[in-house]
Amino acid sequence: MRIAVVREVAPGEARVALVPEVITRLVAAGYEVAVEPGAGRTALVGDEDYTAAGAIVTETPVADAAVVASVQPLPPDVLPSGSATISFFPAGSRLTEVAARRDRQITTFGMEYVPRISRAQSMDALSSQALVAGYRAAIVAAGRLRQFFPLNMTAAGTIPPAQVVVLGAGVAGLQAIATCKRLGAVVKGYDVRAAAAEEIRSMGAVAIDLELPTLEGAGGYAREMTEDRAELQRELLTPYVAAADALITTAAVPGRPAPMLVTRTMVEQMRPGSVVVDLAADSGGNVEGVQPGSVVAIGNAQVWGGFNVASQLPAPASRLYAHNVGNVITLMTRDGAFAPDFADEIVAGMCITHAGDVLHGPTRDALAAEGGAHANA
Ligand code: NAD
Image 1: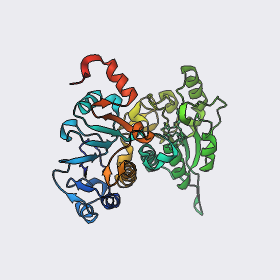
Image 2 (image 1 turned 90 degrees about the vertical axis):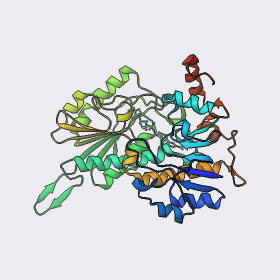
Image 3 (image 1 turned 45 degrees about the vertical axis):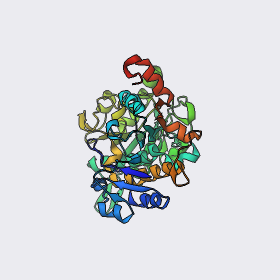
């Protein structure tokens, strides 16, 4: 049974879905792995590395593939009818493609829908890529700030450490905090979840206490703020933002646009040379006026808007993602063949389309709400 690895075509996507060390494992499990030439180039993996791992390098990897692995979704018309795909697949914004995949009998697994349960941790690509993005956010902040992060005491004088504030302390935020601490900054963090204060402190940072109620939603995630709460939170955070040399924002609420945590007026109170890094820029932004993929000046600050940030460190991001995908394939393998068990909650949770049906409930409802536009062919 063939697993195909394609060269990513989405603009700016530098990751690759499988790396040699994972391919060796899949070949040992009985798969044939076919890789498109140059697929790993931007992630620093050469065709010869794939060959050495037991893969076939071919211009037509997708032909006859049972499983097509990628980072970004592929157009349905390049996929063999009846094949399965494993990639990120933001189904809600791709309803036309969902309908086309359903009609071509393609089985679609979306890596962002892996349930956040202990058994699925090794398959959790949202976490692995958030870790990379959080690290990158800290490095961008340190690189753009025209000051040291650490305290430096020398015979020539003392340079005080940078003050960093991190808003949102999930996987990305905690990694940003840890990285800023390693670089020697004084770090404060804030999150709305009850468990977050302890997690922030465990990274060596100060947990900001605004004396507001915590906001826990389903599955340990944050709930969306009411407008009154958002207004109060912004007011209470204003002095912390004003005192920061670097502000890193990473706040998200599953299935909702990113919460607006920092207004333009708040940024305008930051000192000359300040840096803002907004990791939520491509889902609406935590900072008013942020532009995904660009740097804009607001007041005295330069505001860096993240766009596909994990792809900016494609080698480690690909390695972690490949292990996530490899573990998904292993879960779905029985007796050397790709045979997903749809009774398994991980398999069921991440399946969007299968055997001519849309199995993912919210996507099915969204298609139904759009009426006849996507009716079965
Ligand atoms: P996420 O990307 O959805 O959100 C990032 C952070 O933003 C979260 O910590 C959230 O609480 C915070 N946030 C939301 N609204 C905010 C607001 N108004 N102000 C400040 N902060 C706000 O979350 P995530 O990083 O994917 O993880 C969230 C939680 O899930 C964490 O507790 C994490 O440890 C847990 N988790 C569990 C598993 C697992 O069990 N397999 C895997 C990954 C994450």
